[in-house]
Image (tube, rainbow, N blue to C red):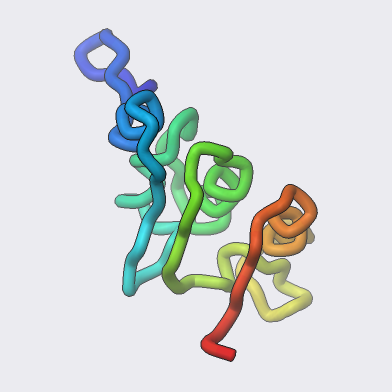
Amino acid sequence: MRRLDGRAVPTLLQLAKERGRSTGFVTNGRLASAMLGAMIPGSEPAPDGPAIASDLAKCKDIQLVLGGGAADFLPDHHGGARNDGRDLSLEMRSSGFDVVRGKA
């Protein structure tokens, strides 16, 4: 829940899930943007893409995510922007997500 004037306010994703709806994000920008990060249940405002990507990777309330910004999910030694060595796309696959990185 987000806090607004001292009271808890559910995110749109939480409201949809409570009503039995499927949820997801579709963007032509980076998935780990501040705008999408604000909608991830349980996440706090994050300063950068890799931090937002970490919150997105552990979110179980979302069924579909389409967008760009793969570098935020990949470690720097694989051409990504993460300096913590984590490969979130691999972690997400291990958690049961299907990860697609291109049209093919």
